Image (cartoon, rainbow, N blue to C red; front, side, top):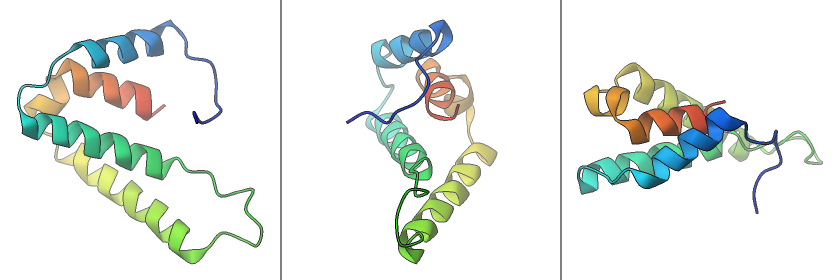
Length: 95
């Protein structure tokens, strides 16, 4: 099930289309993309409506995923910074 959120505008639709159409340069690029996407999804999980208050494990996993995303973005190489698939993923998943 898709997470509720704002309807994609033209920019997001273009990023999504480009990300789906561009082939990966290698299996490593594909793995990096899938890992990045999984970390983004984990970091965006909403725990506000959970009763009782947020479980410590889920909050720790969210914090860890955010730390890992920060490390990925701080140490991104040229394939990540310039590759259309990765640029589209950043635009799409880190709104």
